[in-house]
Amino acid sequence: MVKKWTQVPEFVVGFDTETTGLSVNYERAVSYGFCEYRFGTLVREEHFFVIPDRPISEGARRVHGLSLEDLEAKRATENVLSVEAGLTHAVSLLVDYARQGAYIVGANVARFDLEMLRRSYQSVFERDVADDGLVLARLRIIDVVEHDLAIEPERDRRPRRGLEQLCRHYRVTPGGHDALNDAKASVEVLKEQVIFNNMGQMSLRLA
Image (cartoon, rainbow, N blue to C red; front, side, top):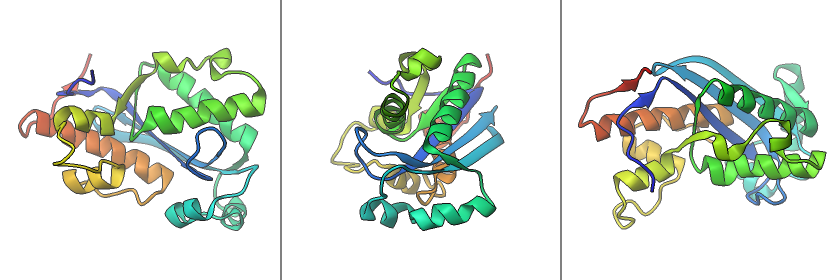
């Protein structure tokens, strides 16, 4: 059972990806967004892009606005990596965050973003992320969608709970299907959820 959070952990990391499509079995990430919050304040962010080894579906392109041509054009101004380098860097970041005890925050982050990462890593490197230090079952994860169901379990009151809907409900600026901005939006939604759970008061767990 998902707990109701009444305190924001000291160290949280928002995490999000934009992808070539919606199948965790086949698709690839085209961008990764990480944002670190200490004591509720943004202290560091990282956004990098990937040239995928498969086509970007038309549906996915309409959502995040990225084509292969767009990604290639970003090489001049952004950090653009190969699939292998993108996976390796994302896993190394998550391993480091896990060692520091960070909570990974996102919307459907375990079922989608982390699961696609795991399956892509297996497909590309023919080994599990756990073989390189990322034990997903041990990650501290706060899924703001699952948390919202703990806050308000009645689906008829809030039938849709994607990140966009949660941003509207909690009056958070939406991320616009940009990996970094969606990662930030997830953390901001969590903070508003905690305020709601505390009847209007923010609380940080400082231990």
